[in-house]
Image (tube, rainbow, N blue to C red; front, side, top):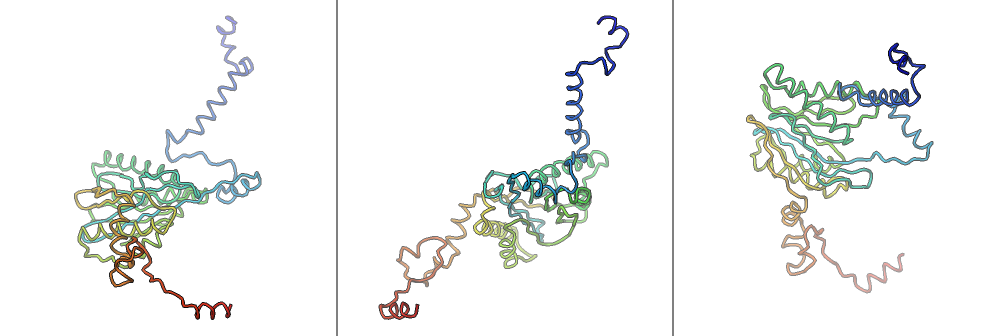
Length: 315
């Protein structure tokens, strides 16, 4: 053995023990699986073609049930005071609520924020990569990355991984040299500028409130109230949204976290005062049914015996 070591014969592949070869193979597999540690844009691809199409077929063939259902409610709009971003905090997997404290508004730098909607792993990973790119850009060029540049980076990533099962719908909001910006980017590679956006399973309900109360000349307090009200109504209608409503305001001096309010507190402040069941002209004021928050406001109607017999005869 000493002569082999002196001559270097122990380093030849045919002279190495099997466990040494096995450990080298494991190290190589680990190196390939964690290649994104050195290059975050290089992810290990699934071992079959068109993962988004073929993975459900493989799961059904193996008898494995895997739910990719997800839901959220995020919104953003521009007004004269800057940009408002608001989101809930519930993370779901199918019908299972995984977390009630998920942070769906990511702080990219002091003047830019991003929202999460879609697959939590996809959105969180690429938001972290984007935050790193924003910091490197500021160190290299001595200025902040613009919102358009950040949106273009995410759009290029989505295009590169299109068809690989990436599920992502993000809003990027910030303030740069051109003023306030609000851009929507999704996993299909679409990039769109706009005044009002809402993303997620609860977005139809939030857009209904925004379409009713939005205007560009809102004051700060009116904008805060509109965003909170839209998210609250979405959480009350959409089972996949809920938890804590986080509100951010972006202006020329940077972003500011306005409040983090639980949905139950918003229910007490909005629904108890705005529902028709609490109006004094509906039913009797002293009726305990009318004192319930968020009741429908329908009054009870007693059916006489004659009407009841007529209806039964008709049936």
